[in-house]
Image 1 (cartoon, helix red, strand yellow):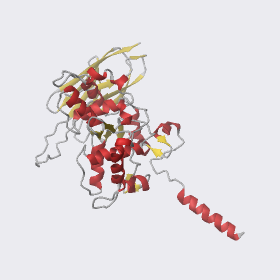
Image 2 (cartoon, helix red, strand yellow):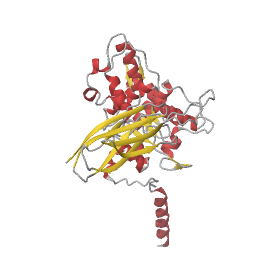
Image 3 (cartoon, helix red, strand yellow):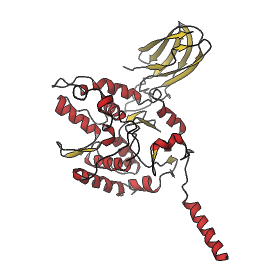
Image 4 (tube, one colour):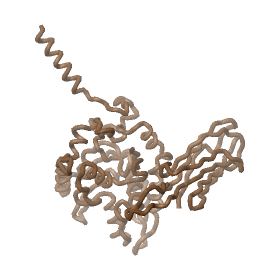
Length: 272
Length: 106
C-alpha cells in the first residue's frame, strides 16, 4: 500500500514537471480566437506575441505592414522593362491569381533547376518575362511586392513539396537546422524545438514558424524578410550570417516552411 | 513621398463619439544615429500633426524624435456638425502632407 502511494506520488511529480507550461504572455490554448493560429502542436508566432502586438496585426488599418502592401499593389500594375509589361499583364488581378502561391514557396523551379523562394521568383519574372532589372534583396520594392503577393494567400495552410527534385534543398535545410554553429555553439533546434515557450533572458522563445513573413518587426521599425530574420538569429548566436537569398537560407526556408505546414499564412504579421 | 491614411465613420448621428485612426509612412529619423562612415544621420521627423473640422481645431499633437517610424495617432471626438475634416502632417524639412475627408452628421 505504501509502495503504491509512493509510486503515485512520483507519478504525480513527473506529470507536474512534464505538463506544458504555457509561458507568458498569458495564453489560453482553448481560446477560440487562437484556434486559427494553432495546428496540432504547432503554434504560430502570433501566440507568443504580446496582446498589444496581436491587436496591431488584427486590425488591417493599424498594421503598419499594410503601408508596404499598398506600395506592392501599385507596383503590381506598374509597367517596367524592355518587354513593356507589368505583373498584371501576365497574372491579371492578384486577388484572383495569387490566392495560394504564397503558401507553396519555396518551390523547385524546373527552368532554373533549383529551389527558389517567392522573392527570387518575383525577380525571375522581372528579368525573364519583363526584361526589367532585378530588385535587390531586402529592398523596399521587393519587400512590398513579396508581401502583397503572399498576403493574397492569407488563411491558406502552408504546404510545400520537399521530395523529388527539392529533396537536396530540404536535406540541406534540415542539416542546417540541427547543426551547431557560432561562438555560442547552438543550433536552431536548441531554441525553437527544445526550449520554445521558455525565456532566454527576457526573450520568449517561439517555435520559429515562418507563416507570417515578411513581417513588420517593431524593433526594425519596418517590414523585413525571413532571410533578414535568419541573419539576425545567426548574429545573436555569434555566427557569421550567410548572404540574404543564399543557397543556405533558401534551403533553410524550405525546411522551415515544411515545419510550419498546416499553419495558416498570416502575412503580413506584426512581431515585437 | 509619404502617403498618409485615415479612417473613421464618415456618417454619424449627432452626439456620437467617433474614433479617428491615422497613420503616415515615415522613417522618423531621430538624428541620433550614425551611418557606416560615422557621420550623424540628420534628423527628419514628422514634428506636428493637426486635425481641423471646418477650420476649427479638433486635435493636434507635437511629435518628438523618440516616436517610432510610421506614427499612428488615434483620437476621439463628439460629432456635432457636418463638414470637412482636414488632416495635416508637418515634416522637419517644411513639407506638409495633407488629406481631407467629408463628415456627414445627421
